[in-house]
Image 1 (cartoon, rainbow, N blue to C red):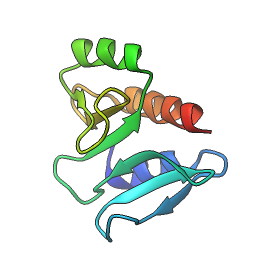
Image 2: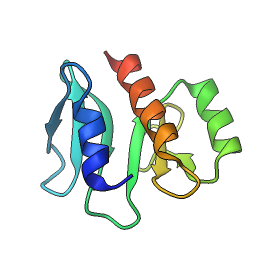
Image 3: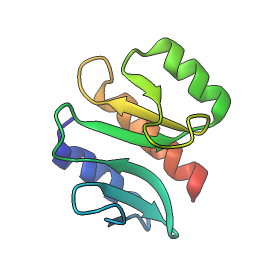
Image 4: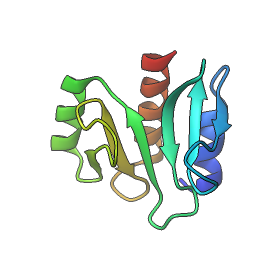
Length: 104
């Protein structure tokens, strides 16, 4: 998944908007004014932070080397995913959708 596909996946969700509260480099995706995903879309490697149920977050981090505790976020409720390779496009889309559902 590249930066354009990631951005499109986030913005395809109903009511989702892109905002830049942390500066021009970090895209923050929100629904109803609440953040459900954040990414520095020009970074290499491409990473995405998403909200997650705390119990599921523990399981996902144990099962996927590409998933780590949220970077600069509440590590109990947020994950940071390195896109590509081990984190398939399908997994990233599922995590985005799950985060959106938690926030919406």
